[in-house]
Length: 421
Image (cartoon, rainbow, N blue to C red; front, side, top):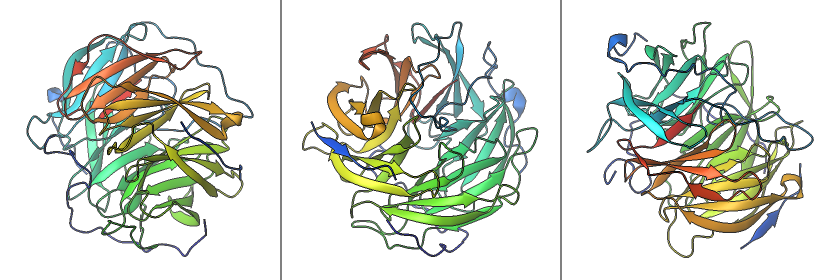
């Protein structure tokens, strides 16, 4: 890991389709490290709002858990139907028509509904504001954009350009004033202000990852994730193309970024997704290209990430394309989605977050699990299976971390993101 000069700013380049197999068409080891625009749709065309208000604690897709000296216990189970939003691709055979709207039973995991918020192109990733009143979606296309949707009316408030191509991830800063997004195709990260209504203002910053150079097999930078650290003091951008995780500080008044450090993975790892342990001193990195997971130390004072040794996903010698990694609210277990292997890997988290121990893999019950998410209480896991156009729900045993299927998969066109509230 080394600090580096500030990357150049830019407007993005021409967009090419995402790098891995099956985006649109065809749509046990131990590692330890030391800590160290105008509205796009007629609101009348949107689906009816969920019957229950979406307000609640932030979910993992939009904010990180707060740091603590020890892992918190799981929240109490909720009752009554809860909102579930589904990201999809609107282009390509069998694509959706916008953001899917459904509800789920927090006790049984059963999903019902099938409405849609129209007017958003390729909403492949979703996040919710900490106050639960606004939903945000990427518009993953050549002229990348981010869109705000008012809840519970499901009213499209408008879109803003990300300044790059193929945005694939976004998150809301815990303070609720800034939206962070990652442009995969152009290798850049963007910041947008969030107004009192939840609507987005014009972009305040755009940083393109021009160094280091692309890793083996890559033609350029590919920003895949942009999130806030648990301490709230730093932003981390995971770039698959440069095998690097960049750490930034955010100016809370101007919405501008200053790079403070870089953490390099081994060449060709292709880091895709980072998630933190609730204790705030360790993080886990899913590496898409070389089929590994890495434990990382994190220093809240400096924002520096220390990358440990890669370890197995438990999927054998085939190509598994690891996608998303999650940690249970109590900090005891981690789950990894393996797209090529169509499975979920379960790890035990040990040594207060410093160690992952591979336990097993579980069939996901669908094809190409692009994204996984936990319900706010951590008792249900949702897997969005892109190629089978389904969402599978699992019950999560709070003591053992074991996953058990909860009924039959729910049909959703080209499902690539699930956001339970």
